[in-house]
Amino acid sequence: MAFLVHWPSRLAWIGLGLYVLYAAGQVNVSWDRVVSGMPQAAKLFGRMFPPNMAADKLDLITTGMLETIQIAVIATVVGVLLSLPLSVMAARNLSPGWLAAGARVFIAVCRSFHPVIVSILFVKAVGFGALAGVLALIVSSLGFIGKLFAEVLEELNEKQVEAIRSTGAGFFSVLIMAVLPQVFARFIGLSAYQFDSNLRNSTMVGIVGGGGIGAALFTAYQRFDYDVVLTILIVIIVLIMLAELLANNLKKIFR
Image (cartoon, rainbow, N blue to C red; front, side, top):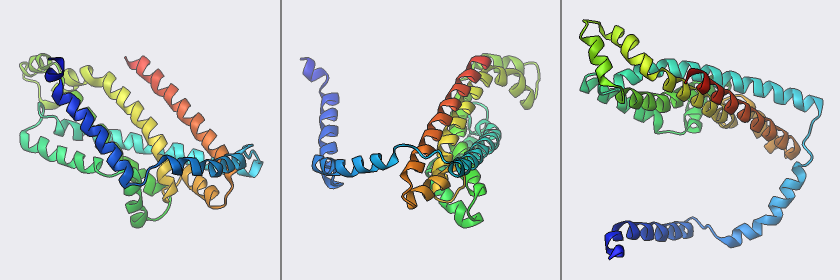
């Protein structure tokens, strides 16, 4: 009897498992390939250690990392500022239906492509360098933050909004006095998370010409300087951990 009650979900799980096996066969995923690749992986990791701490390499890595931080900060600030009005337009409880629908379509378009793909397009448009990376991450921020901000706005306590409206306050007064106090802490948390995301994505867009530490990482791979690659990866890990600590502290401050 219990099986009959839960048979749709069980059949769904069985179907998912069968499709995973089918998909693995289609894309040539096999344990034999993993085993055969172990010696090559061991050779690669052997060439990575110890990490290269030469002064000239550290100077290059430091320059690239500073540019990565700059790209992430600019993209996050601009992306969040642009996402604020976009999310208001996309919130169905604050905007007319036609405007909310149009804003949501724009947000969906921004979310449709990975930052690396967008970065390739901007590299073709504005050339190699940090500008292409910044523009790509701004588009990514609009898609992610715009959607989440809009969802937060749609979860507002409507009673507070109606109370301010009943006093004859205008639209912007309602936003400042009834909307912002309810969502400010959530906005800060999402913005901090987006900075963390942009910091990680900025290393990827650099690989395709978007500037930052990704460019140095790609160059090191091309030159087979795997000890330099390890040094860059360690620096990236440390930077992401510091960004995570910063995000958590910001959430505690504005909670």
